[in-house]
Amino acid sequence: MTAIREAEYSSKLFLWMGALSALVIWGLISAYVVFTQGLIVTGLSNSVVWGLWIAADFSFISLSAGAFAVSALIYVFHLERFRAVGRLAIFIGLIGYTITMLTLVLDVGRPDRFWYPLIYWNNSSVLLEVFWCVSLYTAVLFGEFAPSLAKGGRLMRSRAMISVSKALEWAMPALATAGVVFSTLHQSSLGALYGVVIARPLWNTAWMPLLFLASAVPAGLSMTILAASITSRFTKREVASRDIVSSLSKIVGIALLVYIGIYVWNYIVLNSSPSAEPLLAALAGTPYQYLPLVFELGLGAMVPAAIFLIPPLRRSGKAVLVGAALVVMGLVADRWDVTVMGQLANSLPPIAYVKGEDIPVYGMHLASYIPTWPEWMTVIGAVALGLLIYTAGVKWFNVLPANRTTANSK
Amino acid sequence: MLIDQTKCIGCNQCTWACKATNDFPSNTISWNVVYEETITVGSDKEDVFLPRPCMQCEDPPCIKVCPVGATYKRASDGLVLIDYDKCIGCRYCMAACPYGARYFNWTAPTGANWAVPTYGTPEVPRRPRGVVEKCTFCVQRLDAGLAQGLVPGVDPEATPACVDICPVGARRFGDITSGNVSSPKFGNVPVSSFIDTAMQLKKDLGTKPRVYYITPGGEQQ
Image (cartoon, rainbow over all chains, first blue to last red; front, side):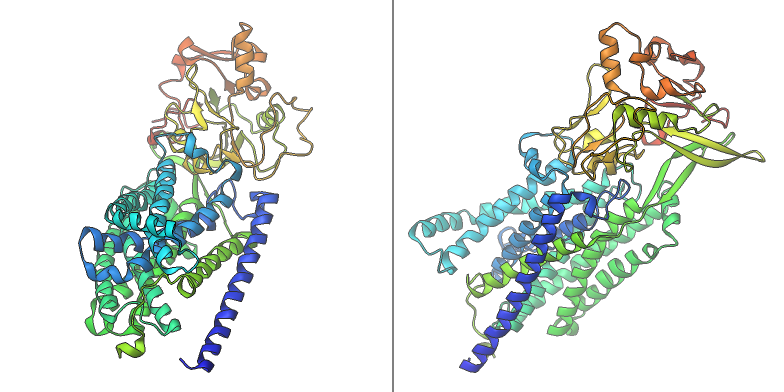
C-alpha cells in the first residue's frame, strides 16, 4: 500500500469509528433514560410485554450461531479447512452474546436483580435454562477466543497470558464440544421459550424449538460469510478463500432447505389449529398476514437457498453477499414476527358459552405495539458497539488469521 | 370463587374496591376487570359482563415459566402469589397467563389513588416499579381472618373486597371442599348446585381455574 492510500484508509476508518462511537453514546444516553424513568418510556404494554429488545436479543443470539456451527464443523466433523473462519465466527459470537446481555439488562424491570437466576432456581422455567446456557456459553466463547487475543493483541502479550492461552488451546476441542452442546441446547430453547406458552396459540407449537435451531444455523453461517466478505473488501485482505466461502454457502443452502421444510410444516400446523385460527383471522387485516411469508420464507430463505445451491451463482462473490444478507434479514424478521405477532392478537377470556353450542364467545382484542425512540436507540447503540468491537478487533487485535493479501493470492 | 354472570350488572364496584384495597394508583393496573360483550342468545341480543380476577389456577402456567420462582403456589391453600422482593421483572409470566390477569409496574406507584377512601382503604403496601403484580384473593384478609377464627365468605373482614362490595350478590367465596361458597350479605350457594355446570375460563388449556362462572347461556359444556 502506498502512503496516500494508507492515509485515505485511515481517514475513512476514523470516520467509521467516529460515527459508531456517536451511536454508542446516543445508545448509552437512551439507556440512562430507560434506567431512570423505567420501562414506561417503551412502547410495551400489559398486552405486548416483549418487543424490540427481545426481538433484537434473539436475533443477536441466533446470528451468533456461526460460532457453534463452525466449531461443530471443525471439532466434531473434523472438517479442518473451516479452521480459517473459526476465529472469525467465534469473535462474532462473542460480540453477539455480549450485546445481548447488555440489552437484556435494560429489558428486565429490576436490572439490580439481573443476577438473581444465578441463585434462585425454578427448574421448570425454560428462561432459567436459557439464562444459564447463555451465561455458560459466553464464558466458553471467551475461553475459545482468549488465545487469539493473547497471540494477536500487542497489549495482551505477557508471559502469563501466553501460558493461559496455551492451556486454553490445549482444552480447545473440549471447549468447542461444550460450546456446541450449550449452544444447541439454548438455540432451541429460545424457541421453547415461546413454544411452551399455552396461552399464546401462535407460539404454542411443538415445532418452535426446532424452528429456532434450524433458522439459527444458516443465519449464523451467513453472518460469518457476510462478515468475511465485507471485511475482505475493506481491509484488502482475504479473510476467507473463495473455496471456503463457496463450501460454507453450500452448507447454508442445504440448511435453508431443512429450515424451509420445517417452516412450511409449522405454518400448516398453525393454520389448521382451531385455537390459532381466530388469532390469524384477527391479524388478517394487518401487514402481518403477508410479512412472515414474504420476508421470512420468500426473501429470507427461498431466494438465498436458490443462490447458494446453484453452483454458478454460488461462485459469484456478489451473489453470495446478497444471499447471506437476505438470510440475516430473514432471521431478524422472523424473530420480530414471532415475538410481536404472538402477542398482538389476544383472545380475552371467553365471555360466555352460548346455550347449545360448545364454542365459547371469545372477546378478540388486537393490541398495538410501536417501539419508541429509547428502544430503537439502545438497540442501534448495541449494534454499533458490536461493530466497533469488531472493527477494533480486526484492526488492532489481529483477531483474524494473518492470511495472504489478495494481491498475493491473485 | 363463584361469579354469577346472570346477576352481574357491570357496575364495576368490585374493580374499584380492589383498586382501593390493594392500592394501585396507576391506570394501567387493575387486578380485577369487568369485560363487556354483546352476545346472541337465541334471537335476543344481550349484554353480558365478565368480571375477571386472577383465576388462581390449580395448575398455573405463570409459575412454571418464572425463572427465579418469584411467583409461587402457597402450600397451605394453593393461592398463587408473587414475592415482590424476588421478581426480576422479565414479564414472562405475563406472556404465559392465558387470562391477562398479570400487570407490570411500568412506573413507580406514586400519587393519590382516587378510589380511596370511597371504595375502601389500602391494606397492603404498594409494589415497587419494575415488578409484576396481580389479584391475590385479598390474601391479607384471608390470613388475618383465619387467624382470628373467622370464615372467609361469611365474615366480611375475612372475605375478598370484591365479594364484600358486590351489590347484587354476583360473587361468592369460600373453600370449595366445605360444600358452600358464600357472601356475607347474600348468603350461601351450595357447591353441588354449580360445580357440574359452571364455566371455567379457557378450560381446554388445562389450567384448572378456581374461579367458576354461572353463565347466561344456561347449561354449559
